[in-house]
Length: 406
Ligand SMILES: Nc1ncnc2c1ncn2[C@@H]1O[C@H](COP(=O)(O)OP(=O)(O)OP(=O)(O)O)[C@@H](O)[C@H]1O
Ligand SMILES: [Mg+2]
Image (cartoon, rainbow, N blue to C red):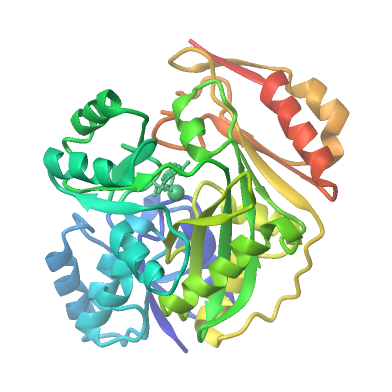
């Protein structure tokens, strides 16, 4: 029996599914987090053999010491975390307990966007020209070297927060002001193109499952324009020729960073001339319901597949890519509580057989902050074997389904 310590089993919303996956494949799951056990999703509660609530999970020294104490009574074989901010914490706990898996040094190239790109440059992978900067003067010097247009973003960013496109010296000053609270930034050549992911589940350094998703429009635009209904589509045919550059890059990136076990989530750009350019990589699953669409695309359970790969080094479930599966996120008009949702019945009548999930906020619910969560005011999931038909349906949902708050 493998005993797994799972960090933050209650949040983000996919975590209970990963916990359930571990329980289902026969692991004993011990959770640690800052929510009370009763506040966890029932699925997490059901599959946790034990749970420790700490006052502040992110107080590293304290959490490590609490876990060390716990480990005197129960053997801990693995430490798992699928949430970006907890990657270092998981690594520190592994080191403190002498448990196998990613160390702090292994984690750095997955969290520090400069180290990440330097490692990849060293093996000839195409990254945007880049530099790191701590002060305004360093940002200006980096901009001088890299040239416009460029991107200024946090070294350890997530959710496109504090990410700015800069076209000239005036905008550079604005970006410097806007990121003054960020301790260190990455300054990068701006890459114009489409954005895709390359996601994997690995064991022993081998890719056991992989996926390519397509972002429509690119995340930077999703974050800037509230009226946009962002889409993420898990593609049925990730082996098509015009994705090959990114997929091949993805495989090389995993090798270069010596990734062995678990979930990875890489983002890459495809320029108009077809060139694939590296974006970023996380040593964890993607968020914002991106694992759900992997399941809808293949009719399988990727959470359990991850768990099986992690515990047993293989994936026993059979999976086949049958559909393109897309999430479309909606943002209400106005502020406050959701008052009404328009256009949904008609869309259901027209495309109902392809709509597999409607998870919009109900009338009466408080609107979410669309800048803070891609999930925004909820989403609709659609799947279809034909990509063109799927994007047509998603675009219709984008224009015809409208939510109003007040
Ligand atoms: N060099 C670049 N060229 C063009 N666009 C970029 C560049 N860097 C970042 N962006 C845009 O900003 C978005 C966010 O950047 P990035 O993915 O590096 O940060 P993040 O905040 O970690 O992302 P996530 O939203 O995936 O957590 C990208 O998806 C892309 O749209
Ligand atoms: Mg990103």
